[in-house]
Length: 419
Image 1 (cartoon, rainbow, N blue to C red):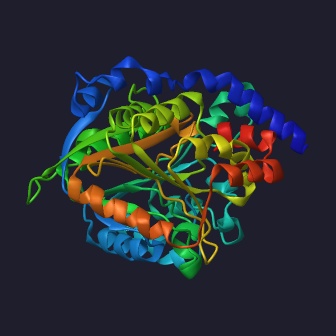
Image 2 (tube, rainbow, N blue to C red; image 1 turned 180 degrees about the vertical axis):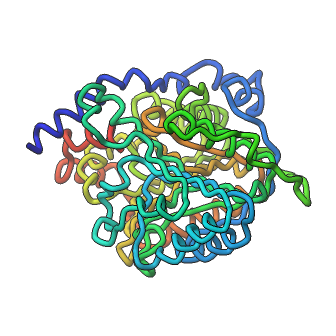
């Protein structure tokens, strides 16, 4: 039975792999020296916004406390989209608060991905599905729920809604990598290491609301009116230029365009935290070209145990395009689930996107690039901090040894398409 399941996933992946176009990583446009980064991004589908520098949360408990505060303050509407959403003992107060808000007249809308109930992280041992929210007035839908229909259209099983976003009354919004489940926010000292970023930007709130309504109306029989979600004037204007790539159904925005532009425009350095770093040939070629022209490349990689064989298989290729390559081995055994990408101490990408082949087109993703030297410097300092806690420094010799000892081509294919 397991072999049948593996075959089903691989066949499905091959059917839809044509949806992923990474040729932009080797395109003339992204290498062009006649265009600025701004001009390239606009040409490649970015939405230009003015935002404030965000408040960063790197601890699930701290983000949960702030999330509770933001929810209590809402009196109009709350929009939530998460990849994996479920309740557990520590999360029960948050979900109870959401229900109380809904019962008091606040419009609470929540999208969870259809595989939430099949969560394979540590959360599965503590998980309560969220269907009970519907009985308390919360509008809850699943994006592409797992069903027999996937036997007819297997490609739809592979395309998931991987975004994590919040909008609170149009006054505050957040994006990042944390799911709303046990291992992200409910496990205390055992929380996986992750990040969320909180903004008070009218323009970003409006853009995220637009996307939320579009996704909701595309999958739900209960349609919602965009005009019913007010936007509010900021007390202070945003002073940071930002570029939003919302990769979802019906849109032409692709996160690959963002990463390709930054890599091929980089002049000094590239730093990243890469979860499940399985790159294709075009992504590797762009990084190799950057390294050859003198750009210093630092990669802090993180891998789940079940994907270790797949990443080990490609590890020599990954190490070859980096000047520094670290494999996260946290002293407490906590997974590093962050997504962070910085170039030239100026441009910083945050959001839900893993820097790997799958996120380039086989899932709905959100990525926001901030043009801010101060934010880039603080984010680079954060990467340095993460790199100092229980990492394994990998050179080419060690990478070849890991490939020989642990590498698995089948696991590589699973991670390549399945993430």
